[in-house]
Amino acid sequence: MHVSSAQFTNFKRFTDLKIEGLPQSARLVVLTGPNGSGKSAIFEGFNWYRRDFGGWGQVHDPAYFPKTDRAGRPSCISKRDHPVPRGQAS
Image (cartoon, rainbow, N blue to C red; front, side, top):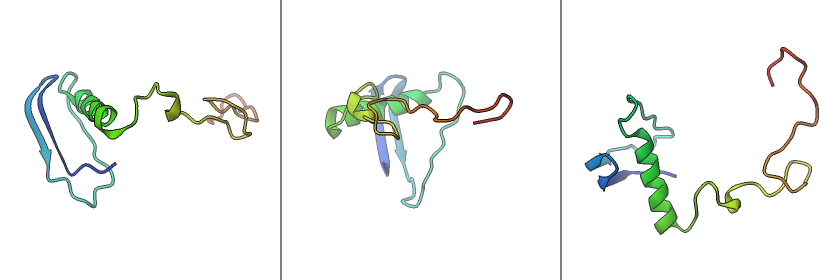
């Protein structure tokens, strides 16, 4: 998803927040700030907008998850076909 601008009015902690000027070439935007500054609220606002106006649901929507694992078995989580020896990263 590419966002060129967004405005949050009376949403969560924001009375009037405008996000604009994001370049079309931006491939990653990082939000930083202290706890309680509203980072998660921005994503909740995007999720609320997409859910109500974009035609698709929240993360708990079954359509969001893959319906089969790599072997074609019905699953939401793919399990490893081989164990990882102790002390080695996966």
